[in-house]
Length: 180
Image 1: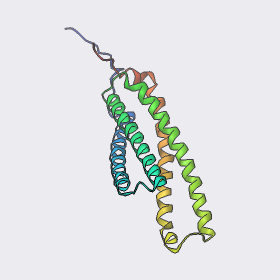
Image 2 (image 1 turned 90 degrees about the vertical axis):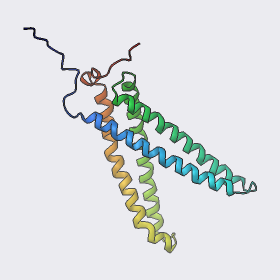
Image 3 (image 1 turned 180 degrees about the vertical axis):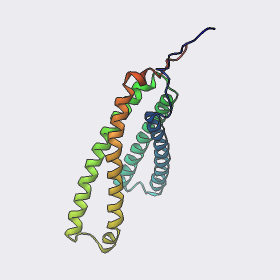
Image 4 (image 1 turned 180 degrees about the horizontal axis):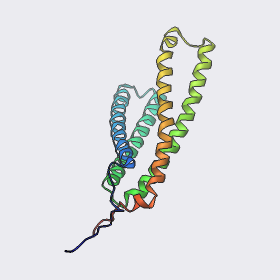
């Protein structure tokens, strides 16, 4: 009788949280792609309706289109990296680590900007510089900002943990190089 032992250290056992986070990033990136495409379509329609005599508005809309294109490209790249990471391709692991760090920094920065915007809106609302219609929309604006800040507060540590986890030897051993 021959006893064959397999190295089980490189094989994941059960559900691994880092893979769930990568799947969530993949889904959020796909949702982001849809949002950026839809926003670009709306901006394009507005741009087509503007007269060339409004150069400031045209320049602003073209700037929005540029940002939409940049965000769309970044989301598509993130989808590819996430897919490679889910398939445990060796090239995707360092890319995912960098992407997770970049996203964490971006979410931290955008959260700080959002918090400053909230303070600015609160100061304007307390000084009654807003119209009655804007005053009625404030609760919804505050709720949206609160949700975005909570999302950022949860996502930043998770992304930092993901980047750290993908650098651990136990996870690194689960990735394989492409065959030539």
